Image (cartoon, rainbow, N blue to C red; front, side, top):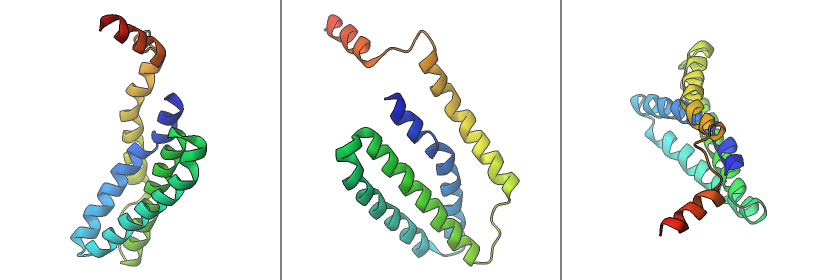
Length: 130
């Protein structure tokens, strides 16, 4: 489960940026471009999943999700740039990425505390209760 979390962790700041891009495209009256990027990302996620999930199981699904969200971010960025708007400067994007990383930090630190348990320990404790 930890490996899956490591693969999925970059999605948190990416979702912040994708959300802002979606709002901007909607404000520009370009909802069809948002639909196009979401549809393309969905297709990419399904295709990557078809190839990776049988080989890598949950990690394959996580890689597919990360690839899909990355593609959606890049497509939205392209659409916004093509509209002639400089939507976000590097320092603004850096602040968003930093805040997303800080949001994910507590959950990654819980693995290192005595409160975290392996899934086998948790299931054994659950079985002893029930």
